[in-house]
Length: 611
Ligand SMILES: [Zn+2]
Image (cartoon, rainbow, N blue to C red):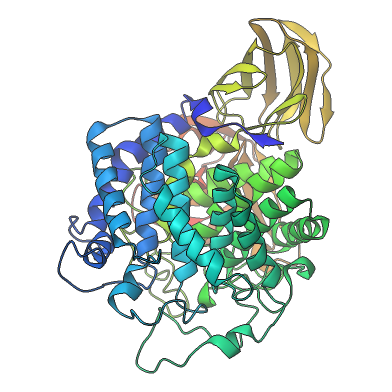
């Protein structure tokens, strides 16, 4: 199975196109101003200035997290994809300027990291556990790949290859990153260039992980007086960074959620490329564990606020769950790799769950505020205040001192086209139902749809190959699916969650898929005690929540939904599009989870008491 080049997919639907435009025209320029310290009233970033100083283009000192550079790289990725969709000469020039600073900050030998260049020039690669050098390098390489893929420019290609070469040499036979990410980047550089050296380097990092559980104990130097992060990382806590056992025998989502999801993304990519069945089986096993026992109904991952970790099985507290946005972003990356390995409608449904809920909830309607932590229940004055809930913010901040999440979300949505289709030998798969068009090796496909609000889609086929199968994923939770080919009712076979239409196509053939999108009542596994006696509501790809602002003085904990209450979807032109749920005979209102916190400082709750 292969991806369709990003530049061959256009998104024009009424849900995603405006959001992608918001990112291209508002969020991405806003983030640049934050990274340049030009925005008032947000935590200082200094991220671009760090690189400028490291490049010798300005005087000054390093400021920020040890991985501050990665914010710049994720912004470059965002800008590359966003400008490919939505060209803007002025922003393109700014992007070029930022890339020139990065290029200049690279040292003679290929090394590139502003913290170490400025603060600890003699200590390169000295503390892989805590210092995120390989993590930053990974994001730098991904940025270079994105520039080439999206804009066909080599502004950072050579810089990335020189950095990758230093890493491949230095870590030829030992060393693993304390925070996985370099493996993803090396795989992407390999896919871009075809150079097997990068595949081998990625594979080396994955193969070595957990072979020596004492690796970080042996190789982490003491550093009295220097702190590399908000919290200390114990070299003996090997579960935290998934280095206690080899990756092929791991079974559960454990430790730091983002580290784990990045590792799985690279494992799936590498296994797919090399045919490593043991590694792929570990991916499947861990995906099952994570989605069946450790994931919130919203797609949130990492329920334990202690150092951003997965919780125990079924430990899914609603008010204190951490659910870092980056973990949901990384889940999409992982699912994409798994879908390329084996099309499966259940994987596509999980991807939808993350895109429309777990990830999207992070961004405000104005594109300038972002959640890092994504709870399922917030009470203002308690969330963000009470001991044990200080990490939960009842409203989205404009920026974060540790700013990994906002540019991770924007780089994801700016490359959304990548996740929609893939091609097998004789089959074109459509995994996500999003309106637009795609140039594929089978021909051009146009999609018009009212989804995610309405259950209909028309695919128009302009074939260049005559015979092939179109495999269309109908989102899970939809009912009464009917298919018409050129107006004729057709019995389409469903295989692995895809409607499979195999025929000799002629110019302008149409496939109309219609389905019902009922309001679904979801119940948690009884072992999830936080959701006992409660119901969550969903319709189409959206999971819903109630907001205090719709209930006057009542607390949402007093809200009880009758078991048989009829609920229907209604239009709401303001925040939620055509997707508000209302009661037919009762005063009830719920909005899509992604849109919470946009109207006022108010209570929010996903799991509702049911009569
Ligand atoms: Zn993050």
